[in-house]
Length: 424
Image (tube, rainbow, N blue to C red; front, side):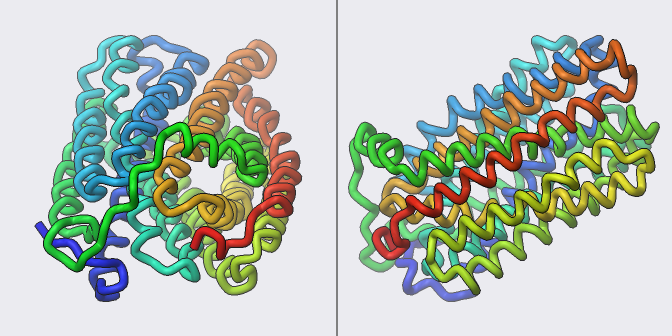
């Protein structure tokens, strides 16, 4: 296990190795989550559960336990050994992913996925805290974009891997095959990721502990962060349900097999999200240069461009056209993520950023993975009486109308933000 060192003394190679390992963790996070989405029709048939119940399992119940874990682990990450924390989280969720194969009922599946949710809920804030400390502020938007892009790779790869495995394994065998390798990833992070707080390196002291009440007062007292929360609520409600339900959408609406849907979704999801994230990071650092209003304007423009493509994706009659619209929707919608996160993290001191990361994760997860995913499932079940197998079209169209409101809230977040230099 590596000894500690100050961020300023780390070599670029060591810093980039750590970023690469954290990016692998981010990808694995979404691979393990998304493979459940590609097999939802088969899981529903096997366990005799409908769209609304699947939405509850994949969304609302998952998000509740995700959030329960996120805050105490983020509290540890603001002072503790973050690679160790991340490694333990990866090991927990990977084991839980494989254990889902043992489920024989909806209740059993919900209970096993508690481990998946808890592990994923803790790794994100610790990863953000570590990476933001290792890189200077002028590169943070790009670095955050790399982390977000790694999640995008995982989203697309999860569907593609699931579809590929479906040729030889059922949903149970596929979850085992995808879950267990994560234990090796956790071990690699613990052994090789840099941690400035580890003893034995330069005299680098962990930030002082801030009373929990003070942390929440700082976060809740920021007008800009309140507008940011409103932005991510609106956008997550429309964004995550498209990603989670996409596999079911193309299987039920466009009559694809699991293998066909998984392969077809790789470019629209991974390509669209990676392009959007990296473009947002590059343009944000190049043109905004720490000016909050410019970050917010850039985010709002991307959101308004995404809105019509989301509706077009859901309503297109041709699967090819729908997939093309889905690529554009993901690319434009993702343009807001890195700028809004960079803006948000600049509003709090260094020793409160993991807790802010957990708070943002809470809002995104509860709104998107929780309420949004469950809402699409519920709307689809409601519309099924009239539209049958086409019901997901109208459920996904309905949630798109929160996007323009999110764009307006993003502009308000920029107008009320503090200059970035105050919490460098």
